[in-house]
Image (cartoon, rainbow, N blue to C red; front, side, top):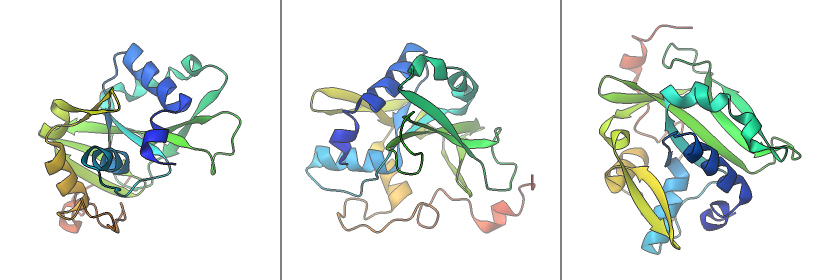
Length: 197
């Protein structure tokens, strides 16, 4: 499903409504951000079958308590942190919002990734990879407007995409794997200094 269709689904609207109603800041992230920037620039860039949203980590516990606000149609699914390291303050690295009636493997999902501020950086875990980026990208957010709708995005969005996807992020044929190519993955020498769980 293309990014424009994804952001017009009832699932996406219900998720954003809960975040906004409860004062939880959020931004479009990773492939969803890349695809949306591509649409704005008239490029068909790498998309994902799910939408990815980032939130500040301090709101994650509050978000977990809001599942009832989704009503009967949707549910939460927690994704465990499999990094094996003491990198984030939580045992879960993300939350998926999906239809209550669809099989969890095949369903379209909204992934919400908590990112924890530590000094001048934000940290998160992407399945098994420990990641980190300068806090300036999330401390204040920019906006992107598509088809009359406004979405929050990381500050200095093009620089952010360059860090995450590399200098060729505008290439429609970009081959990018989050666990290998994302330059926010911490290096091995830094990883050696992080305690095991």
